[in-house]
Image (cartoon, rainbow, N blue to C red; front, side):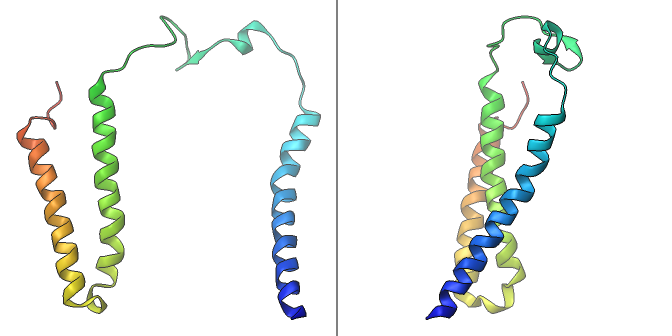
Length: 121
């Protein structure tokens, strides 16, 4: 029974040590860094140039849709990679399940292609 508490205490100790190691450089930098605020330091930085225009600029909706499609197909890769590495041990059921998954993703890609979504306008 006492062995379980030792394991928990070890885990808590390592967690606290990780927290101290992570926070110590931040605290040292906060204490030792010079604090000289100025208008130039508080100005918005935009690629080395002075910011121009409204801060709340509008982006085309197409950029967000491209990002969403990227995330969807990136998740597909996350599912396919472990399946491919364990291909010989998943059996026929695993092959059928992943084939259906790949077909659904391929169908969505064909749908986007036919709708003209993948063309930059």
